[in-house]
Image (cartoon, rainbow over all chains, first blue to last red; front, side):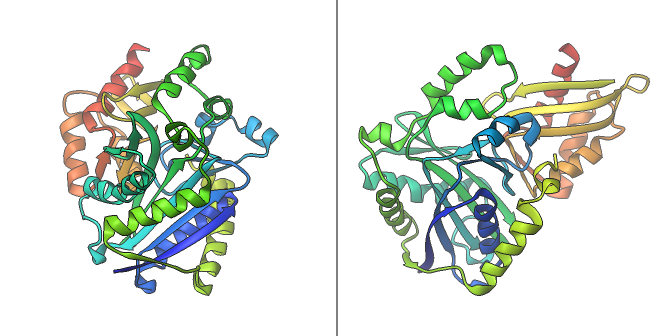
Length: 251
Length: 94
């Protein structure tokens, strides 16, 4: 089985989300699943579809620091995208590459990451619904949507993590408990760099994760690019949706 | 009367709800359900919010919502109708 593999680089938050959606919308026409690796410039916060930007994010602080903020089309929580490899996985429902059962499909796609972590010598586990942990600490969060007969799952792999910086950009229900919350999250979240005890580059992570997905799906990931239709569609989705206040402040 | 609560679902996700409560009829005038959960299809949350308008906050809420979600093919991950009722009840004790 052959998958298209897009080894992308830095884009802003709106472009990244638009590209993922364009790939999903074009999936049936394209005819093959696509796996894309990418990163974010400037750093950004993305919130889940069911969250409120005003409730979750310190928008003033983000503007002050030049950090973008965007609503995803997928559920889940607020994520600070900085030193990470972000992946997306898109396939049609009819391809039967992943289960019709949502929980099982999360497990199958996350298995690609787990096998990728194994390439680096890290023992990772899937924690339903949507987390991957190493040594009991979260190193990856994932979110899936199913629309127009296609499945799109995207997620993060933390190369480095700065919990304090993350919390400086997020709102917490009780400011007095912020210090405790930060300490709590530090206990529950980790990064690949921390677990390996050494720095890891995007490139090294990409090599490992590519192999992980190839093993998980018994597939060959062949390097490719967005076609001209996808590029046009991504631009349309970026300007018509992700860049708009109406979308980002919808809830 | 507006009510709000933040409720951490045991072994689940965080629910942040706000609703307008009609004291006379003990029912929900309107409700907004936010959180880091998942709902398939995503439009299912708005359908649930619309369904709950005018519904009484009593022992019928959970079975009626369960039935509605099943009929509409809405799948919830991270919270259940029972958890939503708990979040609503938490708002009253806040």
